[in-house]
Image 1 (cartoon, rainbow, N blue to C red):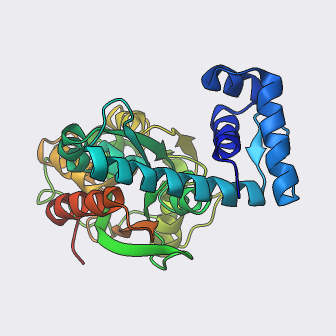
Image 2 (tube, rainbow, N blue to C red):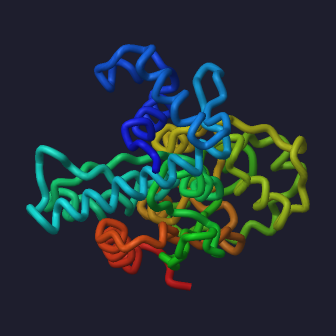
Length: 311
């Protein structure tokens, strides 16, 4: 039988990145934290932490963290069933989500539900192709991901498709691609058959992060280009990424929810209206009977129905 005080110590050490900060959160001494971790390691017979800076969990440690997070969620639901949601012991729901969803449709989907319950939302933001790893490691109870096949012990539900448009300001387009600077909307832009590898090699791109391979896939699929054949700004912030494009620092792939209003206002034009990238999104969550994950999915699905493409 595992001591849950020791499991909690493990979870806090990993979340805080070290023993000293964990001791402050748990209101015990650092030696007491070390003793709890040591007892847990002796119980399972394996090392649970890599003593680096910051401290990270070993594969066995991650499995224990996933178990502890699941138990926490079920205990929160039990308290709610017995006493109704207790504001003195709010349920923490950890969700991994990609930045584009967070910047557009995700929070409006959950705001009403979280305000009605004594729940706290803890978001972990990562690329949509990596968020499922956070679910697998036990760092989140659910995730918005591009991975359709459910992981072991999880379910996968289709939410919708985000369509990405290749856009730039009219000024940037005129400078690098010869597009007319007075284009105001999708209907005004012309097909980009004239855009060439040579132009794309000279025009700086704006890319979200080194993890984000969408731009790379776009250029490979439509222009037969490989990494190293273009220049790029790397800006790992959804708001700043879009601002950089609006400031004519470069062109980039922007989700339809953000791109189309700016195109309609003439701030951006679509460079390749016949060449877009579609990214299907799924909700993966643990297969445990917790109302939190069920209600979260219902809320996400309802909002996604009206914001994402259902293809």
